[in-house]
Length: 206
Image 1 (cartoon, rainbow, N blue to C red):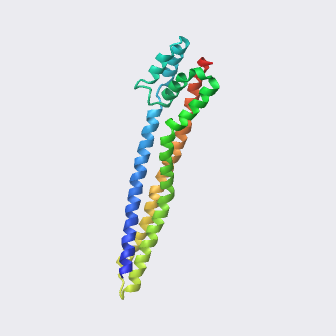
Image 2 (image 1 turned 180 degrees about the vertical axis):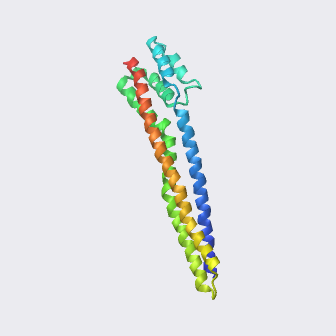
Image 3 (image 1 turned 120 degrees about the vertical axis):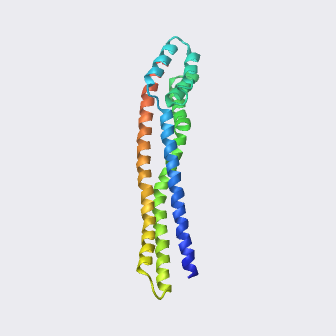
């Protein structure tokens, strides 16, 4: 009987872990979408046009200062243009290497770490749910074996609680999988769009 109580307590711990997992996943999802929103510009052409005009006039410092204004600094394009202009004397090939490194280490590294957390949640959710189901079922059958009379209602409630653990794990994993796939797609679009827009600026430095 004591073992059954311990198993029941373990089952409730699993439910608590599932709740923490759900909150952690939602938190990471919100931060990812906020980061993507900051890194993207509604009108990137406005920035590239201004920077190209300043570069053609050899006013590189003004172009860098423009990229570092609050309107543009948090965007991926603004950060990368500023880095490219700061290293303009190193040759176009070297500038491209620096920009690629900057993009991966400063622009998307934090988002990729959070994507890793979401991938972990997707894998752990169903496994934790299954573990909770197994623990609850062990507790339910332990009560059956240790009692002379078993209430069908109580047994049904125990089994329902056990199955809800697996359901909760899947309920957590499926939305997180959708969020992870959506963020991956948005990151690819951000990378492709930023690369295309940055090329317009690098052409002026050739």
